[in-house]
Length: 136
Image (tube, helix red, strand yellow):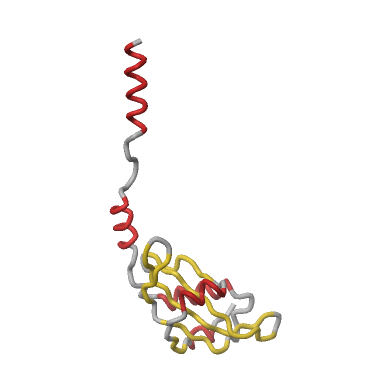
């Protein structure tokens, strides 16, 4: 009977230990991934070439410099992009997107108006002529 009680105590005690990194370690890992994306335009163009139905003849393309913005449990570098692409042979009007970078590489692209507006409301756009020369 004593052995059974001892085994039960050990099993319950084993469940009470923390497994995994502490909150401080998680925050440090998150922050370590905030590396400025040196090739953010190249990554963005490669993504948009496959994202857009017709990447040719894009008009009025502009992009912001990546800036740290709050998203998720901390900050990430985010570049905002604005462009007018063709859909079914006709220009669909200006569209905005937000590119999120992790460890200096493009991780996610948001195009939902509510998300993009919140992330890009203070963005300063500069011409992005490279995007206007995309091919299929």
